[in-house]
Image (cartoon, rainbow, N blue to C red; front, side, top):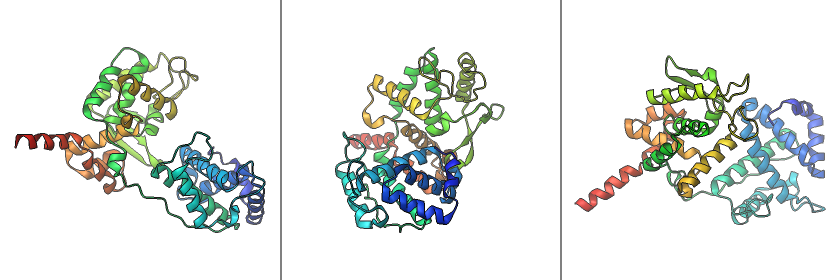
Length: 343
């Protein structure tokens, strides 16, 4: 998806304009997506460093918009792609809010955060068309989510976190792998993408430091506790019995999964984690991987009461981003509630 090969098709400005107009008039989805990718990799803020995940998400959003503006089975468009207005985007957003994705027959209403991502993708799609000299960028705004961020994306309560670690404390290699992944997210604050992309050369045992490449390719050094260091070293030894020759990812597929001994994908790790949550009967609000990073952020802040230290450990460029963890301390709220009964 992040290949630079198709970019050559869009180098010539005059040809770029003609091809963009042709693709829009003929509903050539493949060509329109290729134009958008070329724009993202050549002209967007991150350019060639734009992550494959962002490219994939934006492709889905643009495909959804095209399915709305000009349904594939329709002889003509509901909205002319090159003449869309802000009102047109608002109508599309309204359907996302009430009916959900136009790509799935079993769609359900999208949440405000997902709609914001879809709109960001489509606005960048129109910036690509403007770059080609074929259209203007219509203006629209995503709906606000009334639920506070710390309620939408809660941290895993410490009791559940301990239950998860205890459940994964076994001799089974997949459990030992997943336990280490959980601890790296829940105690060192790594994102799931950072976990699956860890390479052997990123670990510096003499210093107890992981070199982690985060969003936008930003590099940060993450210190590990002594017990987490021991668990990582133990996994690296166990990993040798399962890894394919030449594979240098820290986390690899195990068991019957396709690609045994090769580096794990985010999807594979998420599926494994969600399986553990279901087995343990966790409430659905605690599924996923990112809430483990929130768990780490909450613990960092609770231990230090220092937003700057929390931001440094999590790799936040803006300390205000870390302020959410001051609101995620449910244990602190329970302590306050319990003290009221004693008053």
